[in-house]
Every structure is written in structure tokens, then in C-alpha cells.
Length: 281
Image 1 (cartoon, rainbow, N blue to C red):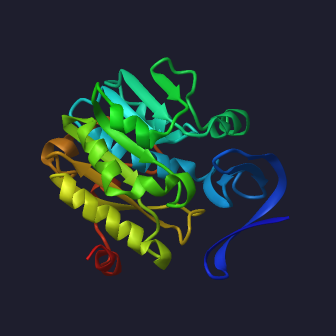
Image 2: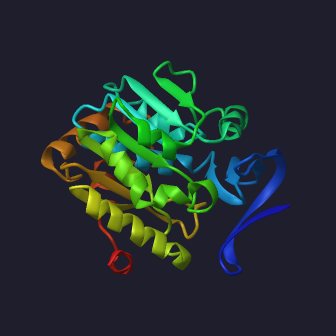
């Protein structure tokens, strides 16, 4: 049996599947966990790969640690989406963190992850508070602002479409503290159909935030393997000397747990190939 995800005509990804472990059509989407022949258990939503046990660390480390180390003392963190728990796991490695709200619209994602991806999340951590509601409306009513907001959503289809809108990012800006920092997944630069959403998102960030930058990570099971992410802040640049000092010291203390992210990756991930720069223009 095979799983196929097509991202450009008949071009896509093929993964060998031993069996289907979980499949549920929820009010929002179709959530599945597949046992693969190479990548361990793999979660898909509406036929698109969200993560596998073997490569999830790349995405979660890059989405979490880039903004977390950029902030001088992140205490309150908001994760929109992220129901598999991997982003929260990485956020909770930071000793200054006191409170994490993870707002996931679909409880089936968390339920499936707990049962079939048990090593991904850290759901028993008392600092983590899981809320089953719409993250888009959640950020509209935040009264106690966050130091870091991380958008760990799926592709811009279905309930995730609004996660790419300017109004959503304006609400995120307003939900951040004066030193607040945001990160978000922003699709593959190799997939032409996503270029309009990527361009629109970064235009919004440029308008709303003082600093906005794209950075890259390489994730085997995501379309093309090259994935883009967004960094936005109210003033902090990801290469500021004090940021790099925190990255060096922090990654040294976490060294045993980090498998992708390190100081050189933090610095180099913001170097963009020419064709990617053209998308942003």
C-alpha cells in the first residue's frame, strides 16, 4: 500500500504504508495516522503530510527555537495549531517559560497524536494548557499578551486559510508584548500554487511588524523538501549580537536534545536563494 501526496499536477511524494492506524473525518478535516515502512508513524490531514516520527524534529526545532532564543526572556507563549505537541515540546525546553497555551481547533489531532505519536508531545507538562477552539478568534480576544506566538498550522486550505490573512497577523501583533516575537510556517518555495499565499503573508508581516524575515529548513516529507518559515518581531533582529549569544549559550545547555537546530543553522537559515527572493518581490 502507498500514500501519495500530489503538490503539482501528478508530481508529489510517495511513502510506503504498512497499515492505517487511525482515520477519522472530523467536522474540520480528515485526520489519519499511517504506519510507514521507512518514516515511522506519520500524520496526515486531508491527505497532506503533517509530520512523521523520524523527521518531525526538523520542523519543530526550527519553528520553536528561532523565535524563543530571539526573545530575551520568553515566559508566556501561544501556539496556534500544533496539535501533535511537537512545537510545545520544544518551547517547553526553555527554562524561562512559565505558561504555554496551545490552541488547536480539532481535538482529534491531539487524541491521535497522544495514542500513535507518543514521543512527539509533552502533554503531561503542567505548564502546557491545551485549548480546543479556533485560534483565529482566540487571538482577537487576548487580554494577557504573549512574549512569543507560534503559528503551527497546516497548508492554506480549509480551516487554515485565514492563518495567512493580514487581519489575523494584525491580531497576533496586538496579542504580543512590546518585545514580542512571532514565527509561522509559510509553505514550500518550490510549489508555484503556494507563491501567492507566501507573498501575501510576507507583505502583511512587512506592513505590520518592525522586522520580518523568511528563513528555511529542510524537511524530507514536506513538498520538495525545502520549507519556508517566517520570523517577525517588534524590533529584535534574529542576528542581533545578544540573540546570537543566547543561541550559543542555550543550545549548549540543550545539546543532547537538539538534532537539527544549532547556532550555525540559526544564522544560515536566513540566507535565501535568488529564486526565493524573487517570490517575495
